[in-house]
Length: 317
Image 1 (cartoon, rainbow, N blue to C red):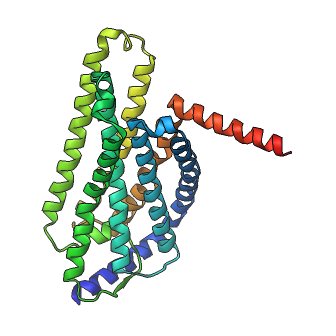
Image 2 (cartoon, rainbow, N blue to C red; image 1 turned 45 degrees about the horizontal axis):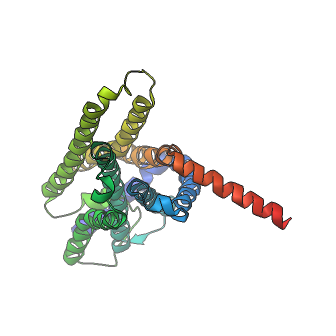
Image 3 (cartoon, rainbow, N blue to C red; image 1 turned 60 degrees about the vertical axis):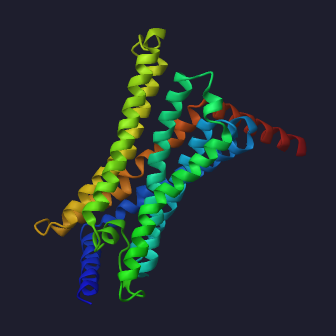
């Protein structure tokens, strides 16, 4: 009971801090970025799945999975912000389920962009055996495994928390992943170690694959020019990977600040709001243009579909 009262008081003070600093204004760029991305991603997904050649390629299946995970994350993030801005109280169970799905989508995107780097390395390192190593059927199984792996930890935590909760119908004024995870009365250190090790493995794979790619291709002369396509692509992918990983480390900082009694509530609210409304949206805003339109096959398919649509309208007219 004391814990429930403390959670209620914390969410109320969180709302007061949001109002005092007018942080609801962050809702404007969040809505714009989210809507722009939700308009672009489905178009790219249609291009991939309508083209038989594209949906048979592992790299385009990985792109499609990344875009899908990003769309799910953006929809839940925007829905959460709308509920918080409208001061709509939701039950703890609903909030925890939404948090679990949001974390799943975020982790799935991280795992998929890591696999995209591994896929590129495999295609360059073993070009003749690439299609035998990663046929479409195996790629589908890998993607299913990615979603399952991303969902195991958050949904296990939801089940364990609900088994210990006394009042399942308790409602909160603010639904945030930080508050949901911050009050988990389980092995918090173990959770941090789990996500830290996962992030470390992904980072190691990315660095290893890029270093090996450079070593394998440096004799081909593609790195000699300062503005060569290889350099520009590597720089763009590196920046996007940094944008995907950085919000996770900021969220770890949020959890650390959440348990510190000497940190002002306003500082926690500011860090959480900026991370949720800015940092977590940046990679999802850039991903469609980098991973989608920079692939010539996707852009060609998009142009072909637009031309076919234009011709059909002319024929009807």
